Image (cartoon, rainbow, N blue to C red; front, top):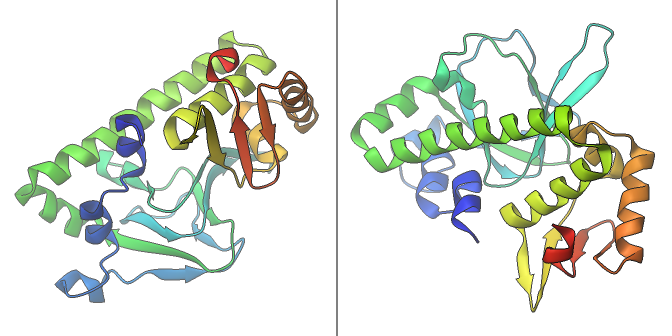
Length: 226
């Protein structure tokens, strides 16, 4: 994986063992994974911000609601990713919701007090946490810029390219992305429509730039995609 994806997903053992300990440490009794069913909420907007979370299994959807009740998806996270991190930036109440997308989703909570205590004595951990905050801020800035300055097709293509750079695996000269996002999910994350996503993906497949099914996207030529 690239350094960029290591910053984003933290798949190194140290952080995962800190937030989702599997044996031995004192925090294990306070930090055991919580099990959620599909569509269960981990937290809602306006709830007190007390914990930061790591995903042990499954996927979590982060979003918010408009006044008319419409749901806005901000990100979809998978195993090894953390969420609820704004508590470290002084968030008192949640501005978003976090919802399980899969059956048997396991999430490891850690109180902000416990994490801050660990960060005091662990500069490497502190650096990783600061990196994730900075990376997510840059990612959000890019998304806002894309919504303002780029057309729908470009936003979708950029989204696929970003997924490839962050979580793609090289397969020969091609890049494979394990994909559990529906066209509706991609539309929500790019500010487009499901029909537009379907049209753009089909065009890219017809041009032999990508191939895809329900479980993966295979990018045949990254240069053409860019």
